[in-house]
Image 1 (cartoon, helix red, strand yellow):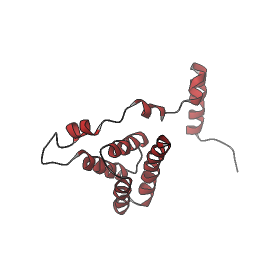
Image 2 (cartoon, one colour):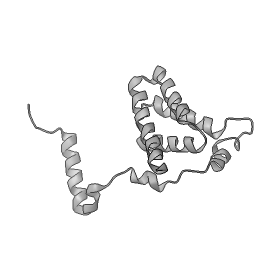
Image 3 (tube, rainbow, N blue to C red):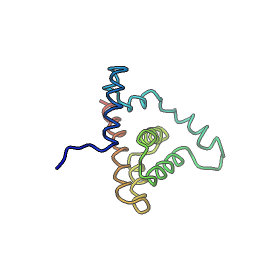
Image 4 (cartoon, rainbow, N blue to C red):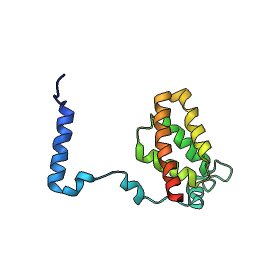
Length: 135
């Protein structure tokens, strides 16, 4: 076997070295930190903007956010940050952990098991953080 790297791996290594040269702190940069800068909207605000504030006979914010999770799962749960933030907001809007898991599991029929598995992993990250926050 060869230890040769692909052109992409070489490019990424070069970019990391350049980032370290510009700012040594970037070596330990974690993009998840940006998620903590974006606060979870209060349920009342979500209802105003995304729920019954749009249409009093329409979907509530919780349902809209569960539908958003379904759509993100259908796309293969590729966008980690938006997925985790949507789980956080769904929880704030009143979605239970079981409702979130059921929404994601339902998408396995349409998006496939790998997409569902990835989505469940991301959702669990958020829900595990909730457990840590409670202690």
